[in-house]
Length: 180
Image (cartoon, rainbow, N blue to C red; front, side, top):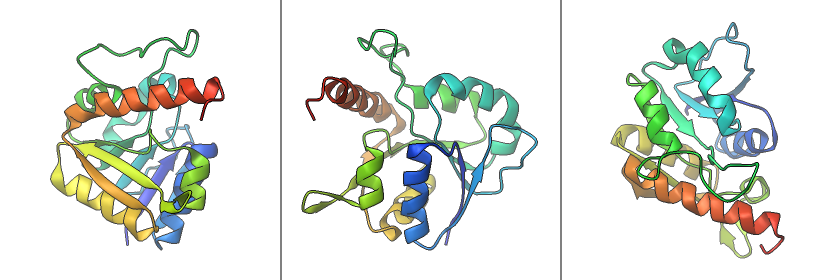
């Protein structure tokens, strides 16, 4: 059983919590107030990308030695026409650079909350793609997701986060146009 902290209790945070609850994990919500400790060994950043910088500035020390899961899609929400990270990078890579003592993995950004909660997409189990450089961190998250009844696939190194963010961006723009 994993100990998991989720920073952010919005719709994605709730959906991710439901997956981990189904797997029998110990899950806590942590507010943005830095005085509340982060107890989990896996920490999910279930917040919009613009909120990440403040959280990292306030909690970097608390996140050292932990698996940090970036679920963000760094979309320019003013225009919906681009990502706001450099073309050769990703939000996850930028977070890893700011948290050198943590193992950052990218996951859940290509999923909708509803399919995480239900655990299915049509006839198939919902699949969570996970990318990261730390094999033990990826394995811990993959195991936690699978224990919750979902399919989970190792999408490769943290370099693949860029592609995952591009997929998330495409899904968001299609959903905004009501094409999915």
